[in-house]
Length: 282
Image 1 (cartoon, rainbow, N blue to C red):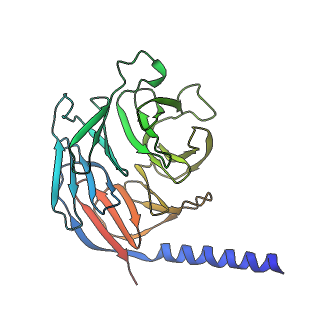
Image 2: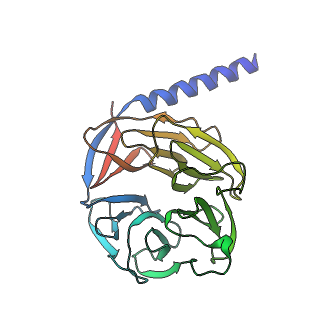
Image 3: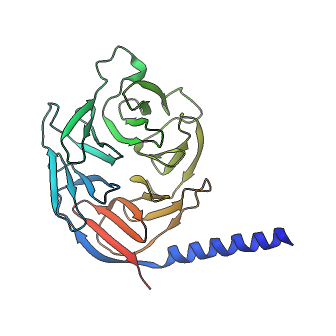
């Protein structure tokens, strides 16, 4: 009898969750004007950081769309950017993957450049990366870089010491086909690879992959929820090791999605030119 009651509770929770996700999300606000975005994130302090490939810059915005700071601009020196493709904000730094310059820039929260991760000249081939596609920081403080040149993930300690790599040719059970974005979950690393979300533990051991009907563009973790995006669809799952994704019902047409994340009862969606704010409709 107890097992039956537990099963009924589980079914009820699943149905309730699916019903909530089936509710339409209505557009309530739009901020920013960008030329061609590639990624965004929401800092713990409530600011957006956005990489704009059209201007080769990273911007800091508040919830009203006011631009507090910008950094970058086309260039090949330490402060310049050429095709910034990803941004993530952790406790101390804002990190930007600069694809064409084969580096990851570290900024403070006001987008002052404080350091660069660059390994093309290293004499240790296992730690060399080129054309980084994405960057993230795990709950342990390790830095993970999606290495576009070698189709693998390379990861380092907080201080920049090499720790390992995975997903490349001959490195393990799963080899990437066409990886695009990476995100640190609570206890795992999620990598978008074509139409799959591939999951590894924090040490690069393959766990599983989840297949979608269309090619994925991004993966984000925020507030205990994982969000993945195609051009026209957004899926969300709880980070509870079950990874049961539900497609969101979004009342908005005419734009392509670049990135998205859930924060509390709000959904924030990055398009090529702006950030859209959604709330649950009733």
